[in-house]
Every structure is written in structure tokens, then in C-alpha cells.
Length: 315
Image 1 (cartoon, helix red, strand yellow):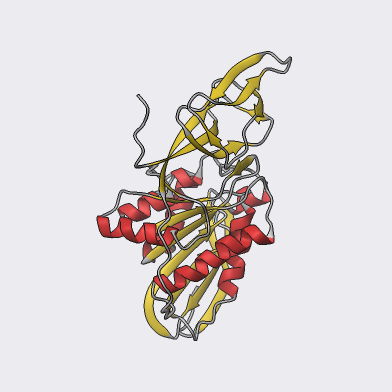
Image 2 (image 1 turned 60 degrees about the vertical axis):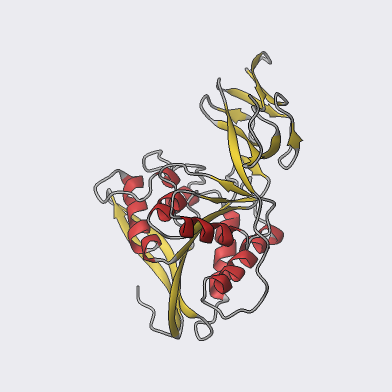
């Protein structure tokens, strides 16, 4: 796909994997003047609908004659997961696309899809945003994620990017294979934004992502701007609570709620009502994520607690 200077081009990019042709809708907005490249992906997980609506609205409202530089957007980055309504993973091999970056041209289906996204979109950018939301069985308190694996300049730029979104906090996540961890490691300032969830989208959730992307155009240099800098978001560290036995999950705490160390977050029961697990908070903090479905499997992340990074952990 080619977009001449001063134009917007959209269309499908075909990615052939194991005789399956994946059609990825991509938009390129090529500014009239040269400048930085902002890459944005949405729908890395198939049921995260806020991201797909927000990115579509953002990119088609851009005026290529007004920006200096280029925006490359993948509007639905895991198409088979989207159409099969499959949360978390690529149904071609059951792998999580956001644990597969930068991918490999000779890897499995998910590894090759990650490699295509990395080679054609992410690695070409000067700034990168991965738009997410809670997937079909997830509910959360909105937050942004950055990785602290780059140089100090890259990490500082990533934190500045995260502060453009109207969310309560930024969470430091350095999980191997995520899009933003690998982008930061490659020297590309990046942020992952999480808004909404449960296989739903609303105009208000879409607006949080859309307006944050609009602000990113200005701080990344694609649009001239003389507005005052936004205050940085407070950094947090996340602490996961894992499911120990497959069963029925009854969550007791809503995302955004403060919790004490040892607080009961929910109970896993068997089909007859017997208790299999009391899930308790390992630290004091704020519940930012929870599985919202009744069904849970052993090894699932069922809850996540965020604590300020400058607060000492209890011993």
C-alpha cells in the first residue's frame, strides 16, 4: 500500500499464513510535509472493541494536508480472532499475539502475524501506540502501560505519551513479547492504552482513546502545538493473582476499588458450590483488573492490583 504526500490511503493488506489469507485493514495518512512516523495498532486481541472504533475514528478524521509526517494504523490486527469472537489468543494456534513480538518469519501462525505487524508497521515508526481494552471476559479500571526496558530518553518519552490519555494511572509492564516492550527495546517510545472491556464499547470509552491519540499528534511533532504540557501520570507496578483451580469465579471487588493486603478479592468454587480458592490481594493497592466471566481456568490471571512504585512493599 502506498500513500503519496498529502493523501490518505486505506485498504486491506493480505497476510498468507498456512493457506489462510488474513485481511488486515490498514490506513496510511501521509502528511504534506515530512516529519515523524506514528504507528498505531488496534484489535491485537479480537474482542477488544473500544480500540478498533477509536482508532478508526481517529485516523479518518486526520487531514493529511495539516500534519507533518505520517500515521500508519492497523485497524484490526488479529482478524480471525475478531470474527470468531475469540478472546486473548489467535484461533489459528491458540497463542497470544501480544506475547509473540517481534515475531519470526518462520514461526508459528501467531509468530508470523506478529512479524508482519512488526516489520511493516511498528518498526517503521518513531512513536508507537497499541490500543487495547479489556477483552470479552475482562473488566478493568482504565490505565496506560509503558515498558522501562529502553534508554532513559525512550522511557521518558513513553511516560510522556502515556500522560496524554485521561486515565488514572500508568502501569510499568516489562512482559517479554508484548508490542510495547519490544518497541521500547528497539528504541521506539511506546504506550499501550487499556480502556473499557467485556466485549463492549461506548462513545465515552472511545473518546478517551481518541482524544489521547489526538494529543499524541502534538507532542510527537506531527501537529504544531503551543499548549501547556500535561502533568505526568503517577507510575504504578502491577501484582497479579492467579487462578489455582478451574471452576466458577465469584469476584467480590470492583475495579478501581482500594484494597488492603490480604483482602478477599473473590472465590473460585466447583459446580457444586465447594470452595476451591480464596483469592486474596498480595499487597495493598487498587484493583485495576478482574476476570468478569463465571468460567475460569487454572493458570488464568483473575485479578491485578496496582501499587505506587515509590511505596515500599510489605515484608
